[in-house]
Image 1 (tube, rainbow, N blue to C red):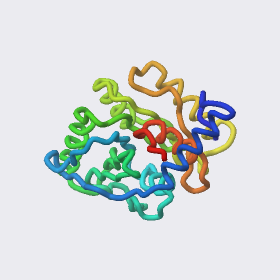
Image 2: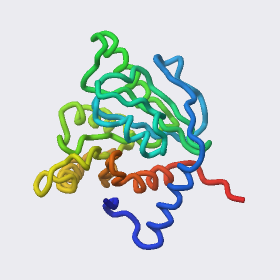
Image 3: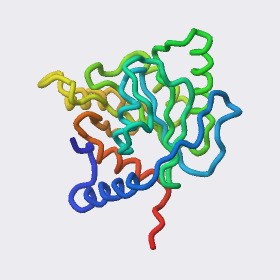
Length: 224
């Protein structure tokens, strides 16, 4: 499914090709941060992936990078217990944030994760955008809105990415309908990107378009 308001014709083709080149390069784990002091220092642009537990974040990261186990997947929510950083070809850092809304850990541990993520989101100079993942079958929930409220207050740019589009319904419940509804819902939010991406890690829907968006945010490509 194309990105709403995306470039057409040759510009769209060029954007897709830029995304392909970016993700054809190496993508390696560089750090896992369980507290503020362990957050890595570097000068590269970061794009963070956030979402409710079990929204399909790890599966989407694996799909977009073309790797099976870059981010460990699990049917049990609350598995990710730290902020994980991945270097994409020396041009972009992908950041995998712990899922919100549920945790297998105790309440104190969950509160600690929440504080760490809040510190990261509000005080990271290299953070360019947060991709807020939302299950295409469930629309925005209270936890999603709370995260967006915090990002709006901190003036941190974010973009909604619908996941599991292959599992969404048809007609009134289709992913396209949900995307339009979400786009209308976030229209007045000051830090929200207006375009809602629709993806599926299972059938590849929207993966090329997501790569193109990430390539546009990455450091310039060094040619020659």
